[in-house]
Amino acid sequence: MKSHFLLKGLAAAAFLLGATFSAQAEDALARVKAAGTMKVGTETAFAPFDFIDAGEHAGLNVDVFAELGKELGVEIEWIALPWEGVLPGLEAGKFDMVAGPATITKARMERYRFTPPVAEATVAILKKAGDTSITKPEDIAGKKIGVGKATAQLAQLQGYSEKLPEKVDIREYPAFTESYADLAAGRIAGVANSLPNIAFVASQRKDTFEVVQPPFGQKAYFGFIGTKDADHAPLMDAIDAALLKMKGDGRLAKLQEKWFGASFDTPDAVTDPSF
Image (cartoon, rainbow, N blue to C red; front, side, top):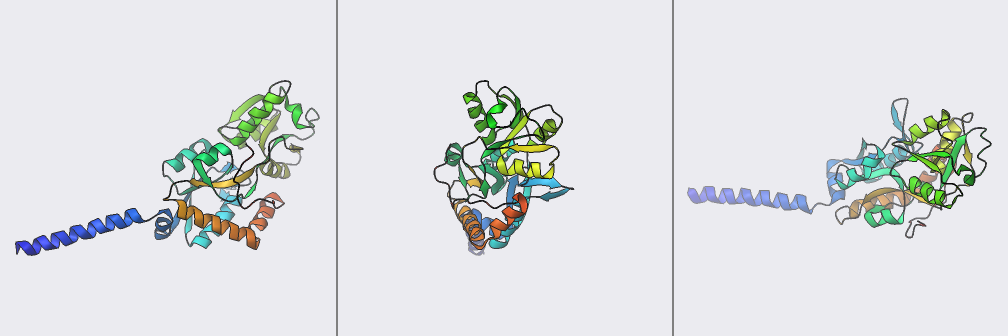
């Protein structure tokens, strides 16, 4: 009788051990598919990529990830945080990847894996409509210019400021929406953000804002972000394949047209960012 119970106990232990090893062997893609849900981190103050419109989560990201969810056969669960907490949240495992999107830079590529670009990210200046004191990018010398905290746009503005005869008075904001409010109120002279973002803002409030042409930043692109570890590689491979499929069949261009009023000629991958 004792040997019978011992054998049952050993069998149960072996089953549990096998189940543990099986769970450990599953990669991120397998776990996402098994759960039927992919958790995506983002901030919701980065129109037209990600924002709240009349209480609803909207933007290019929402539409693109809806298509990605269909391609992977999973639902998308959104987790919103201030931008400075999004990438640390990814590293802490709070979600499977980040929508963002983020400007693809050399420093970020060393730490994270990026998807194929989803839009251009070259930085330009948004000013108040009718402000004749800023007609070209270099006119921001000595002026108060808003920009998002912990962003590639901030780094670009800082670098550009060093080249001007008088440094820019840079004002950092937790969210770009706050900088737009200060610009409208006349508390700052401009906002430095990527061209797709400010073009969208200006199109929504033509009597309030204008885009200063040309952009002052180096040519750059936006991509979604994941971790570089082997565990997440199959998930990122699947996302990359789905995005390239969307690019090839025209779905991505249609969504760009919807949210930006134009489509972008983007490379299939960025391997050597300009900065």
